[in-house]
Length: 417
Image: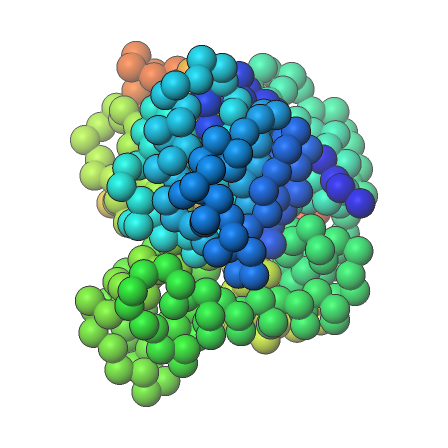
């Protein structure tokens, strides 16, 4: 059964703006199913029919690209020249919203002659947020916080154990109704396929499965941190995995192209002082279940190790914040300066409004987090930037409310876009 995605709103806007849209993202996050909600005709490419459709494209291009529109072309990368043909075709049609392109995240755009800039827009679909999968009840809206709406004292439906389970299960549409064991088995199979097959479909280079797995494990141990390449290499050396920095960069690049890893960039605001801002991004997977799987974690293990749980809870929050922020025309960043002041997430809208968020599982950490947020807000040069729309702590606790100091406590199980 199809569950609505927050990206539907943006996709609908894009269909009214652009002539073609490419929906990208990790395998099995629901790209084709999403596109099917908007398409009026479709071509589904696979290895068995690829030759037939390639012949059609060469001998009868008009039929291949014929309406009704929007026309979905699934797994388009199996015939890379499809991209260039569509890019050329849309120049001769006045309408918008003509083509939807979906495919494996291993699509090799290097085989296309043109980027498609100005003609083919790209939208990234991530695994589902807790609100999309029905875990969060959405009582607290990120967009409403930007509009100044106050948070009433509200109880979250989610308990700590629920977050542990959803870290392991992830936001994959196929796993929503699975048991934890089923979801775990599915994710192990996913990673096996990624390392044995998909990783070697992106470029002409060949990658070593064992090295790739060890790099994933190192990234999982570094979840949420600003681990440099040098730190990752040092970590790998403890496990007798000897690779050069250039080789590591190669592997990280291919994991990026597969939409498996997604670093969190640093925010560079206007400050009152000349404090130097650190620019090293923080390491994250597109979904926390990937890192949890490569480290063989389970919800019961997380419940016994709250240090690890905290790192992966942050990853869960960052995944959801990316989805919610993009749904309201925004983006998220992190902040760290030379004084050591670090803020877990900055949500900035394209109109310049922004809010700062600390991620803390338990209430015993709220006072310290609130002081950090207020200290950070005082550094912002409000003559050049606006005041923060809100300061908040996203937590794994039960109740959402506004503290006496004005900082919001927002259980993740209450949040939506």
